[in-house]
Length: 392
Image 1 (cartoon, one colour):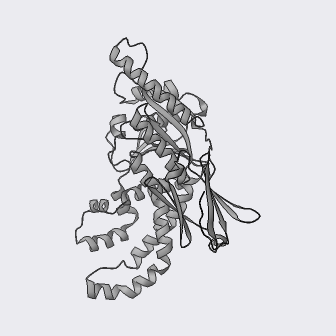
Image 2 (tube, rainbow, N blue to C red):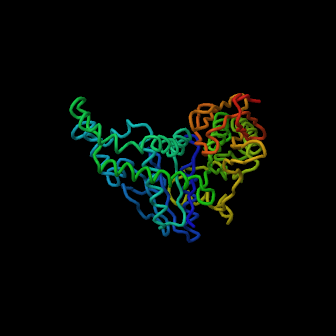
Image 3 (cartoon, helix red, strand yellow):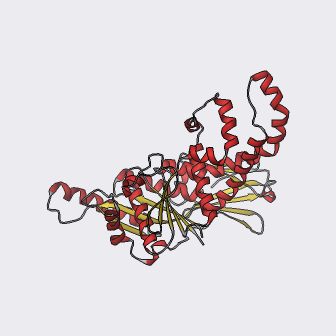
């Protein structure tokens, strides 16, 4: 079975180099490997010192690189949607206007990766993502958009057929035609498959690259919490740019002590994860020779590509008197968690993130009767009770 490895982390921590090293190591073990960048500030070409275009290019035996241009993907895979958007935005509209639609670029990057996985041309697909905040938006977007489309799509075609003449005559708004609606339906079908692909623990792993610095450590903790909230399997932590000891310089001695403190914090917080330390190198990590240094230092073990399932997916459990939903949110602050029911969904909020979880039909006639958060698990009870949510 093919595998997908997604690397993320705060901007500037070196995740592109770490992802590139994994891709190089994978190819060296004889696995046909694709290294993909979804970051609009692509730098795979810089790392491998190759001029890359908009298509996949081979740079090393068994290793291909691909810097995704989402506008190019949309133009070639969903032409009818492009035609419709062009009419709405004005004749001759620039495809770069797609960036005005929140999440659009991220969505088409993910859909392209899903297509590549289904083509089964590669043993491993390694994804170099944008900085953490954008990665979280990218990963949660398929679930969010498919939720909206599930609510709206059943009436979509009927609405278009009824409203199209009215909108064009009264409001000068061009409604999507049948071909565009078919493209939207095709995209919706892909979204459903994409959700399952990204959350399948036997297929997709998320790996976090961090550094032993206060702000980076705090963002790493939040990222791990949010990724678990959305049901993704995080199975690796890479502490990058660790200064070597024995430099005999008072300035660096102080920084080494600071790094030791935050490295210890990371190792205590993420003790359940496989953790790899990567030293600070004495030259820029460009070119295969320099990327090979990371491979030689930390990626030579066979188990580096093993899947480790460390947290379970959300679970619905029927007990004698009620149903219980368990959601993993390791590292969350109990006082910062809020939840409520909205129609047929349960909404969980923590920090700046909110997730809508569609409830099974059997629970839609029930109410949240209580919730408890312990050891990183949020357990929510549902009962047929008029009292509603009590909290604990």
